[in-house]
Image 1: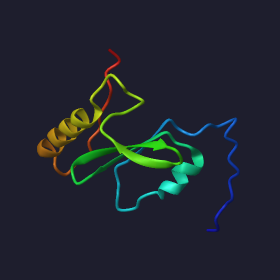
Image 2 (image 1 turned 180 degrees about the vertical axis):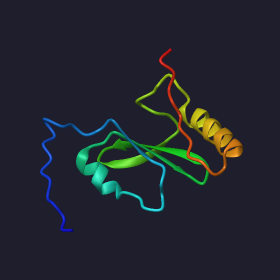
Image 3 (image 1 turned 180 degrees about the horizontal axis):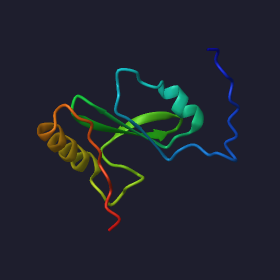
Image 4 (image 1 turned 120 degrees about the vertical axis):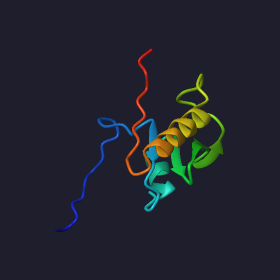
Length: 100
């Protein structure tokens, strides 16, 4: 099957505020995220979450999230996923935010 070209119209379909990569066997090139101006990337690998924020056209690792400034995202996500992995090692883990 051939590749189809898709024209993005960022004024109609803006880029996401956050990209989350959990299957790091194939990483999306950061240049793709830069081109879309995605403000933040979260990468989960080796049982650790790493946060990268777009600054001056490049991604810089950060200890906190600009999207969730009141939450310590890294330790919370790492704890939740580690707990999930230890209890259910052969399943996918789903983390759902509480509406409260």
